[in-house]
Image (cartoon, rainbow, N blue to C red):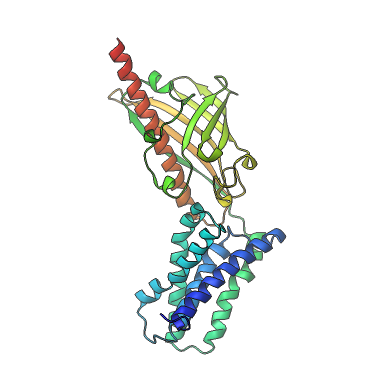
Length: 328
């Protein structure tokens, strides 16, 4: 592929547009005129990138199928995100979370460009300019007038072959967690730290449970309800400034501007077989405007986290019971 070919130009300009918008939005964010965590950047910028790619592709290939429009539009997206990672503009977590949306909306941009070029709509270059400018024009409006903050609850349960009192003993203080005790998960793959331990300074309402994760992530859980062998509820006390910048991407930092767990807790019950049902709940506040998209990612992250903790509690409680039985 020649560097001066329409294909190369489309990839290059699409990538440069993405980098420009990334730096531009970061700059105007200081003046409350834009945000990387916005519909304008997350959804409209990839539309423009995909549009640019297919617009120039039509200078060489006059007949593109819809499938080609959809997939070719991804090329500058991959290059842009790769450049963002290697230049440390973005971390792996943000890139992983943005990739599905970027690919989807780049495809929409590619189809739109294909429609314009295929039907030989006049002033195709003007259409390209309008698409490219749209995120810049809409971003200040969104940042200042559109606020779709919401909260939701993530709940997971696991059956444990151990009495309730044995399971309860595992909750308050969690000793050092070995790597093999935490099952591999998607969140680990994209760089989310794993839990290491948890300890309580007392028991009962008002006690503080301190959780420690990898990469220096430490936060507190203040007990709000304490019913032995029944439930332990807490509110999160997170200082985002105390979490290292390289532990989590700043746009998904715990307790940060956009994403924060509010409340959580464990509940215990017994099923008909005598097994303990351990339930873990977390209430999350989402201050983005991404709607169902951010909700899906929030569910994925916290369900992964819940699964890891519940599996840990199950394995330790069942091993503890075996040890008790063997001793007796």
